[in-house]
Image (cartoon, rainbow, N blue to C red; front, side):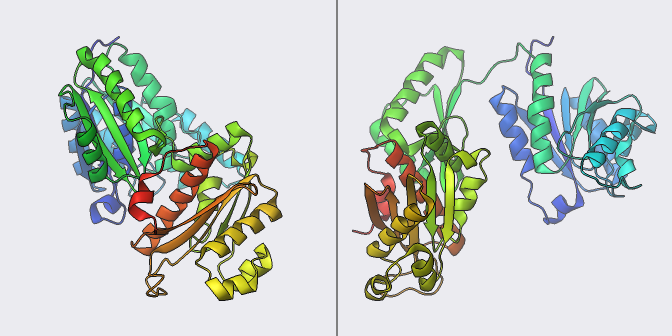
Amino acid sequence: MADKTPSIALLLTGNELMSGDIVDSNSAMIATEMLAQGFSVEYKVTVADDLPLLERELYRLSEQFDVLLVNGGLGPTVDDLTAEALANAAGLAVKEHPVALSHLKAFCAARNFQLSPSNLKQAMLPDGCDVIPNSVGTAVGFSLMLNHCLVLCTPGVPSELKHMLMHEIMPDLDTAYPLRARPMRHRMRVFGYGESGLQQSLEDRFPNWPAEIEVGFRASLPMLELKLQARDQSAASQLEQCAGQVRALLGEHIVSENGSSMAESFVSLLQSKGQRFTCAESCTGGMIASLVTEVSGCSSAFEAGFVTYSNSMKTQVLGVASDLLEQHGAVSEPVVRAMLAGALANSGADIGVSVSGIAGPGGGSPDKPVGTVWLAWGSHEHMLASAFFIPVQRRRFQQWVSAMAMDLCRRFLLDSSQEPNYFRERRVK
C-alpha cells in the first residue's frame, strides 16, 4: 500500500495526432478523471508512430515516473506499435496472450464478425504482461512494470478509453494508493453565464473572497464549469461555506454538480417528476431531440420530436394555421405557440418546447435579423413564449437555442421564479 500520491505521465502515440488530423481530447479526459480521484498528471508527451522513438520515450519516462499511461497504438494495423515498443523497451518477447485471444474470439462471435488475421495482431502482447479488460472494443489494454514504473497501455478510441479508465484503471489505482491526498473541491456546471460575466458576478458579490479557495473556469460552450478548490486540508470548512454562497448566488443557473450535461440533468428531472416531453423544431433541425435521445433511459421521458422546417410541414404536421404563418411569419410568437400546441396534442406529452428562428448566415430582415429566435415552452395549461437574439455562427446558434430550450423546460419543471441571466442579455424586449 502506497502512502503517497504517485507521479503520473502520459504518452500519446499516433501520426494522426502529430499531423492534426485528430484533435487530442483523450489526455483532457484522462487528466479530468485522474484529478477527480486525487491523482495529478505531471507530464505529457505525444509522439508519432515510430518504433525506435516509442521505445526511447517509454524507457525514459519509466525511469522518471511512478505511473505511465500510454494511449493509442493498440489496433490491428501495421502502424499500431505500442505492444512491440513496450516489449522492446523491457527486453521481452511479443507473444500471443491467451486472455487477449479469448477476448477477441468472444467479441467477434457475439457480433457475428469474422475474426480476421489482422485482428489477431491485437492478441500479440509483451510476454508476462497483465491484460486490462475492454468490454466495449476489440483491443484489450495491458500493463507491465518497467524500471519500477507501472506502464498502463490503453486504446485510443475515446469511448473505449473512458470505459477502461473508469471501470478498470481508476479502481486499481485507488487500491494501490489509498492514502493519497484527496481533492477538496466543488464542480458546478452552469448555464446562462459566460466566463467574464460569472467572474464579475463573483467579484461583485464576494469582494473578500478567501485566498485559500481557488476559483477556476472551464468553458465547454454553451455550458460553463465553475471549480472551487481548497488549497489545503485546513480550508475544508471555508470551501463548504463558499460553495453554499455560490449556490445561493447562482440558483437554477447551476445545472448539475455531478458532471451531468444539460440533457442528462433535464431527462433525470423529467423522470423524477414523472413527466413526458416533446419538441417541435425548425431552426435547430432536430438537435434538441438528438441531445435528449443521447441520454440512456430517455425513453421513459421522451415522447416524440417533430422537425418541421418548412411552413407547409408546420401546417400539415403540427396544425399551424396558414393565416398565422402569412400574417406573422414563421419566426413569431403565434407560430411557436401553435407549434407547441400541435406537438403536445399529437404526442400526448405533458410538457414541451418549440423553436423557430433565423440561424443564418442569410435569411434575416431589419425587423428579424439573423440570430433571432422565438421559443415557446410549457404545457397545454401553462404555455410561455419569448424571443431572443443570439448573433453567432450557425452551429453555435443551434447549440445555444437547443440548450436554452431544455433549460427553460427544466426551470418550468422546477417552478423556478428566478429569471435566467440570458433573459437580461439575450431576450428581445
